[in-house]
Length: 167
Image 1 (cartoon, helix red, strand yellow):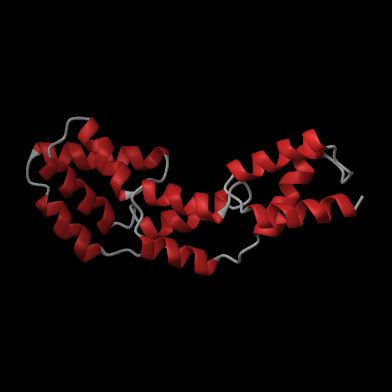
Image 2 (spheres, rainbow, N blue to C red; image 1 turned 90 degrees about the vertical axis):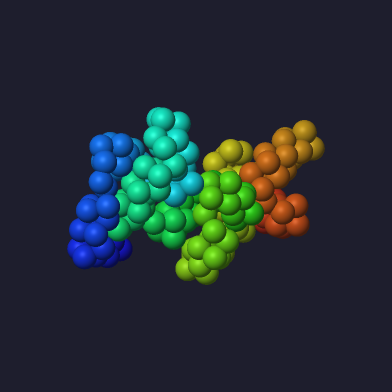
């Protein structure tokens, strides 16, 4: 949820004293229109566009004051959108690479139930079709695919047994 903090927003608007700060804030808003970003990603984009560190930090403070930039919300949304495709370990690593703090990541994981077994089974059904007994070559291919997705081998084998037995 976005919390509107009008007092803080007005304070940050006044601090956007020069044109460089205003252009950086405008660019930050424009970048956030396309997709949600982490603070680290937005900072990198602003530097890439040629804004000074001071202007970039002012712009980040400005968009944060309106609630447009929120790493906690980003972690929650990212986890929700990726949980059907990737393991929790891979999602955690990707969020850390995007600059989200471990505290926000842990909080997002606490709010989402762990369903890796169901996800593995669903990916198997999607890739291999209806449950059936797999030959060794196909079995190896499916295991390698799921390992690349970041799932543990013990969870994979448990779900593979379940998949093959439910034929």
